[in-house]
Length: 576
Image (cartoon, rainbow, N blue to C red; front, top):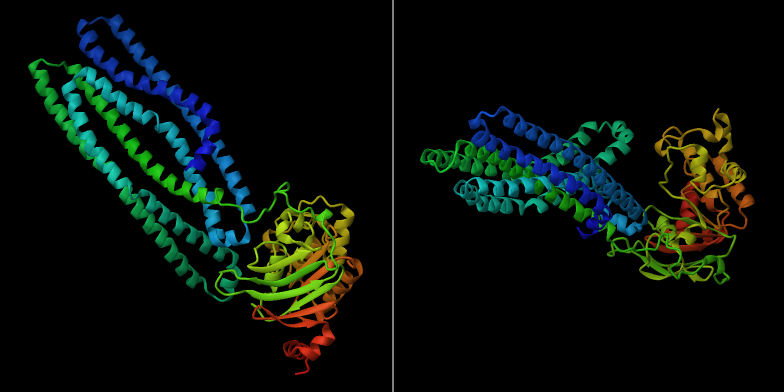
């Protein structure tokens, strides 16, 4: 909660001003029943029309001031809530972008989406309602009790007598609020995950006729959310009926005792009328207080979840520039451009994804990586780019450990195509440039090198053709060529291609390899592929199996020394 409060502090002046206006409006509302009681007991009995009009006008003035003051205060509260939540959501989004891959794996993407949307919305609603009711309800409650004391202490004592019972039940019921709403938010995380999977994989679901199965899976998680929401709402909603019962019992006692005191001449009829009005005001205020409790506990659960993200320590310095890190431009030169020295890494810290990985690549050379699924091929480039911290060993670029480098500068060295890469719903040009403001010549050169100009020229919009989200209006080969053009653009120092040509036909793939060799001779290249023909011309080839190197050398050497490589080659070239 301290983190969330830090976002509210800059808005304190506006909040105090709005709350002051709200205070004035609430006082005006409290004055109306008192004026009515005074008129009944002291003005109407005199039958003085001028006095009746005068005090009636005073009631109208109080009501008008109350209305305008409350409307203005509510608008101010909405503006404060909007600005606080806008800043909070922006910083939360910014922090999510700086989380390391391991931290994202820990929190999970559906949970991050839920925290960025549902949780911030809960906080927004609470900030707004706290300003609208957080001042008005207590003032009506306390002010109503204080005014009734001036009317008749005996009747007020009945009101005060039931307050401890109300406070006890509210406190008792609300204790479970945070835990219930925390559990609810976790279920919402699961719901978001299932929805994302269903929307993303809708073609697969339809292809395998699994719509009924997915509906059942969604029904289960949706039912879980519904049941937990119902449980939390039922528990918290017990506050209001209990308050109503206790207050209505008090109201009956007020009427009975008040009638008895009127009969004895201790009070006048106007006092009873005013007291009943104040009783209604106090009852409404108590209902508002119980609503505030429900909103507060719901927001507290959300605030805890949001604070977890905002307060998490940086695992990797994604964008800090002046952190005493090595400047890559001034780093020492080494015989090798890239070095892995006995590198070991585990995602779950139980079983190694890779272990004892050692290799060297000189500037301009290329390394091909091949191996079965799950052998750790993609892990190597993720570690090289610093997305995860290695458990053992060293990774060096130009003789400098990547842990000593600024990660923003480190990643500017790379042009990369990941195995499951992403295209944005922007133009082809914008997807290749990706906000780097590259010259048009470089964009075109990259597209030519990626063999993408044939389908770009065929479109009437050329580079300005809009790609739908995830590239759904492009074929698999066209997607990969746009992604390759993005990697080539900017003349990267190191090129990482992870299964980047799997959707290309053999002829296009061959032209692509020739283009890379011709246009990026000075670029160090790491190419992961399942086809030997795509990596056979690499300077060195590394064969992985079970996270370990089982073969290392050029194509001819591996055919003689590595049985696995020889077998793959025989199968793919049709000799078996």
